[in-house]
Length: 92
Image (tube, rainbow, N blue to C red; front, side, top):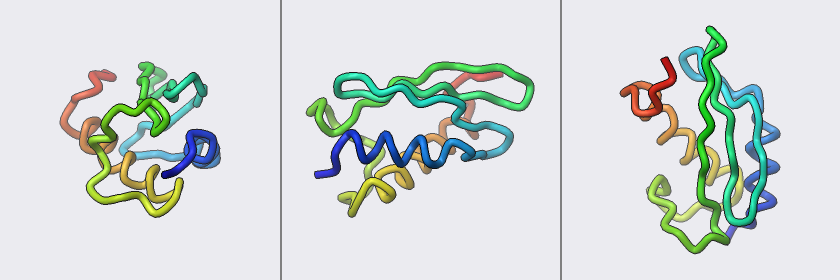
């Protein structure tokens, strides 16, 4: 199992992640979750709370067991990109 700390560090390392004008502007680490600030080019932003492995909650975006924290984040970004593309985060 990947540690919360390793996943949060990987999310922070990729702080410059961009997809279609959106990016992660901030990553806060809470007990069993990460609080992400998602921002678009126009300055609109929304907070998104993501359950981490220690929460014991399902990680529904994982389509296969994550090999490491980078793989976990890669799989999460697939879901995040799909949500943004379909308007699921309602950032605009």
